[in-house]
Amino acid sequence: MLDLLAVHSADLIEVVGSDHLRSWVSPSVQHLLGYDPEELIGSSVLSRVLPEDRAVLEELLQRCADDPNEPVRAEYRLTTQSGRSIFVDVVARNLLGNESVAGMVLTSRDITERVQRERKMFDAVTGLPNRVVFLDRLDAALRRASNDPNYLLAVLSLDLDRFKVVNEGLGHDAGDLLLHAVARRLESCMGPRDTLAHPGGDEFSMLFEDLSDPDDSRKLADDIHQALSEPFRIAESEIYTTASIGISTNVKGYDEAAHMLRDAETAMNRAKSAGHRHETFSTVMHIEALKQVQLDTDLRRAIDREEFSVLYQPIVFLSSGELAGFESLVRWIHPEEGLVSPAEFIPVAEETGLIAPIDRWVLNQSCEAGAGWLGEWQGPKPLWFSVNISSTQFSRKDLVGYVEQVLQNSGIEAGQLKLEITESAIMESPEAALESLQGLRGLGVRLALDDFGTGYSSLSYLHRFPFDTLKIDQSFVSRLGQPDDQMGIVRTIIALADNMGMDVVAEGIEDQAQWDILSELGCLYGQGYYFARPLEPRDALQRVRKPRFE
Ligand code: C2E
Ligand code: MG
Ligand code: MG
Image (cartoon, rainbow, N blue to C red):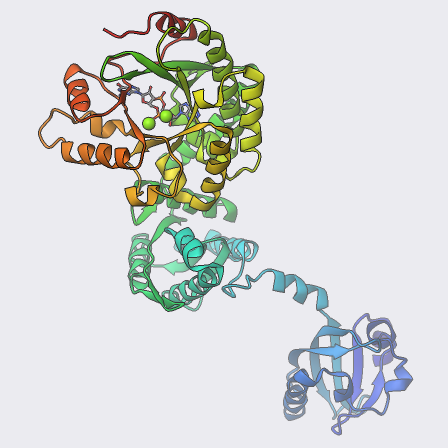
């Protein structure tokens, strides 16, 4: 009977006595370990096991010998004849008392592939399961919940704030240590049936099961913030971290694990951008997320259908009101929605990578238009053209080459092109930005730091970057002339910029009073609706022909 079953099985079946010697071995040993069954009969079952795993097998045999009723189970590694090791899942049954067998029967199944697959499912830095495993567990939890309407789940998606700063400032090893330490703190906030995973980067996903109240999820988020608030000691430094957390619960029901996780991530992004510690996913966010997808689809189409145009806003000398340059501002005419503001579509384009073709198109358009107007320019100083370039472009190696090519094709002087980069872009990855900025500087292109005062950069830090121009954000300008207008800050910015050899453009000038104050403070250039709105190319050309503002 045993023979019949065993001869055809892919599993390795061995019968061993209480002395651990093999009395029978199934033919499948040939396929699994490369031996003939006869070669192994009479040898110890411990002979093919890896030395490190020997104790596991010894214990298995002991447990098996102790209990004739219950099969016992273990996993360990065997060495094949060629020296390879394989993982086996082994079930041992005590049939010593059975006359026809008179031994312990070990059935070994090769699980090498599964083990290797599982290893890939764990992240080496934190030792936590990855996204695939997390979704698998969430899926199982949702199935439990579908049978029991009171089975409440919460998914928390957590993203560390400013992790990049640690990684770049203290090195990747310190970054890894921090992630490891954060993982341990998060574990301390979780119960035995909850799941913590590390899908990558500085993100963590957490699944909490069987909550008693949906509000518990917010309490959990508070506990997590609390647990992370103690500093971490890493590489001789004390590191303080904060995190943004997004929450989704299955109160309204989810069919798919991926959707529940996605919603927690959407809420997390919302928390991050709003500067909140945590945020719970709501239907409103879902609708907004869908809108973004729609916007992305429409944007892709817009590039092919040439739905973009460029407007040119004059920049003037504040001393005389005379034209000094133009800033190119992109416009998108959506076939159904009409005019869509760049503030709305540029962030989406940046996220999806569509910003590259848009920025390049605007750059081309501006240089071509600018080259055409130069013949009509009578002013004493060379006219310049400012073009906004998204932060995401600065990590691209081909940016400098591209700009060089556009300059050559259009024929405008490098010194007449000024590229505007926002302050936050520089702070996000200073090293990558610096390389591109220096490359552009090498071409003779000029550089402006846009929206200054809204980000984190300190003026002292700016020393490292080769900027020619600093653009004071309109939020400062619009308050000038009102009580608490922070005129002191504006004065300081202008003085320090001057000290570092940079000139200053004040953005968003809307009335005479602001103009007066800024010229008094010694600000060289200004831009704003008071002088001109962003203009169609033909109106911009009129301005080139008659450059004085009155
Ligand atoms: P920005 O570069 O700081 O551009 C100045 C913004 O202020 C423009 O908004 C402009 O129309 C507006 N503005 C100018 N004068 C006044 C004023 O007196 N009062 C007020 N309230 N606003 C004024 P716009 O055109 O909506 O652009 C918004 C932002 O979108 C820009 O801010 C820039 O960061 C980005 N952007 C625009 N075009 C492009 C582009 O081609 N590529 C990239 N990457 N970003 C662009
Ligand atoms: Mg700008
Ligand atoms: Mg600006």
